[in-house]
Length: 124
Image (spheres, rainbow, N blue to C red):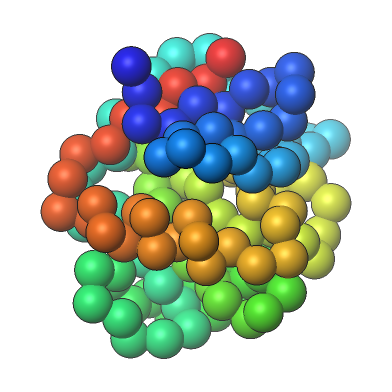
């Protein structure tokens, strides 16, 4: 069983006993493949703060990676430039899974607690 599941039909990401509303893709971008993505350890990056359990990278300090509280982060899915990140300011993503919740701190913290582990994300 995967750690996180992205359901294309319901536009939800579920895992760790919680569910988040998401958007994915856009007019120019293909939908994620239906499969399990393997997320290697140390794949969580943050752009807005220096926090243990996440690698700081200035790229993720841009508005397209931030939630409404200003927290900018990105979880790499282990392939290409695909990932999971907040996405409240623009419509669509460039193929990533965008969390549309105004505050994504709960998901970020759950991922940060597991940053030394491999994770799996099922897309269905």
